[in-house]
Amino acid sequence: MPPSMLLAATARDPHPDADFVVQGAAAELAARRYDRARGLLVGQPWLEDYDDGAALAVLGDAEAHLGRFAEAATHFTEARRRTRGSTAALRAVHAGLAWEQPRRTRFGGASVRGRTSRLRPAGD
Image (cartoon, rainbow, N blue to C red; front, top):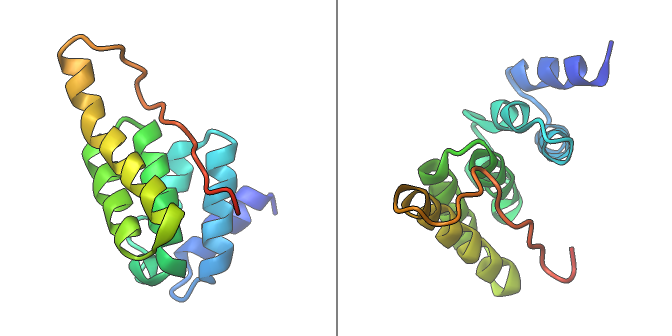
């Protein structure tokens, strides 16, 4: 069974292994398969409680790349509330960029549809 099919099957399991799903979503994100990354995470019952908002941040990143900026900003904001320090600051920046993107596009600013910086804390 190909890895992507295994990952999809695991995500549909009534009690999926959260670590496996989040790592798979991060891999899909790195491979620029943003819709798959989002699909793995949306609706997971553990999403908001996973690893200090890490799953929410991955979801927000996928949504930003898909042009779903309001959803991305909401998820980055929720992820920021679950952590502290430089990680919280970077998630706040991501949320701000996501909130600002539709406005930049609507008013003729430089539109880079769905592209956000991939800032990471120094320790990650």
